[in-house]
Image 1: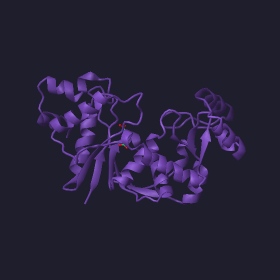
Image 2 (image 1 turned 90 degrees about the vertical axis):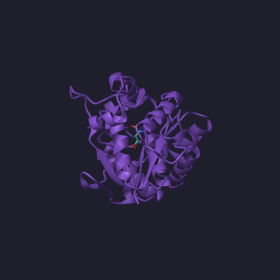
Image 3 (image 1 turned 45 degrees about the horizontal axis):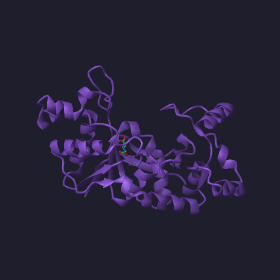
Length: 275
Ligand code: GLU
């Protein structure tokens, strides 16, 4: 039986792109289970009113899921436990760098930014700190993010792959993002960590999400191997674009389900627009 999910972040109203993703996942459950998960760990960006709107919009669209939906903000202990396990394995380290220091060091080291999203690859400055210096700085209360030592982790895990519905077997190359952040200074879990933990805890067998998150799967596959989780199958679906070819974004009011509903569109109209 398929277990799949739709996992929006409540940072705005759902638009047609979300409806396509949610309905694709819902349909692929095909008699199995479809979970809704609210990814609201970042309290500076997520708002409760958007969570309420997501629940309402998806119910209006005709989707149903086991209630209550899992809200990540209520499960921080699960992510902390996974991080602790990685700490015990010696595969994460505290990073005290500011954003500005990272940019400066990355420039000096000549590291190219990430080829897909242009983000700066962490140059590894704090990986080189001694055990004693780490302990002293942590003990003094200096704020730290926790980063995965991706080279060491990949070496320990050995060769990895996953099965993608549209691309077949994909070899995992987790090094593409460098030493990713698993826990932030302000939020003690990152997207990569929380999504991997939740998919495993919820027994998700098929991860349905947009093509824009394809490269994150390289990191998630490595985390699964380190944490002893099963690997789900993946379906990274195409991203919907508007009539001018632009991807829908939360700021495009015209494409939100709320506005379409206010204009008199029915759930059937939305389905016809999408499939
Ligand atoms: N919360 C993520 C987002 O809204 C999606 C996470 C996922 O499907 O893996 O972009």
